[in-house]
Image (cartoon, rainbow, N blue to C red; front, side, top):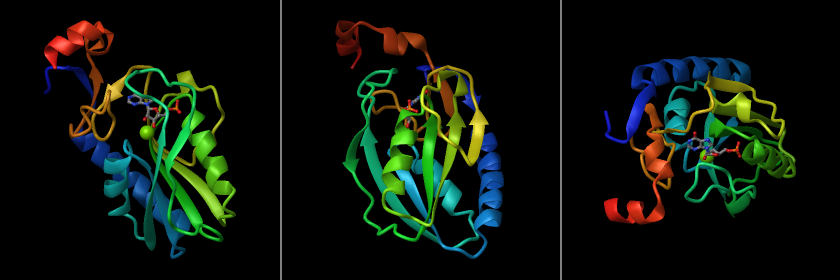
Length: 188
Ligand code: IMP
Ligand code: MG
């Protein structure tokens, strides 16, 4: 365990088991059609690598970077494209791979952005889904776990760029993100 973690929400074992099931379902759906898996950086990186290694369909990897959060647990409300994909997606089967679907702002932006490239299809795989917080409707094709409205970190998910390396997903202690900036400066 980590001193800033309140409790483990999803253990390493349960993450791996569920990702195996998702990979089987996704492989079944695409068969021998090539799929371009587009990882939404940086949060989805661990999910992406664990998922694609278990796919039996032919797969091409790409990465897209958007930013909306900053050092906060609440989205800033804007999605900014920082780095686009570099594959020509026209006529391709695209699978967007995301860490968590929260308000839906990021994925609704990304589905529109990718669809404009005229792919053969666009599907969404998200490891976590927080339906209570939805503001934008997003059609999710594959969801790993539905979780309650708690701020979680680990397995790629961050708070202010920290905790991504934890092998499990845990609830961050509220005092970590409610500390006054001066106090934060003292601990860091
Ligand atoms: P949305 O645009 O509000 O759906 O937010 C999606 C993005 O917010 C995700 O890609 C995450 O980077 C971030 N996010 C949302 N909830 C959490 C959380 O509980 N922990 C860490 N990041 C989160
Ligand atoms: Mg993300």
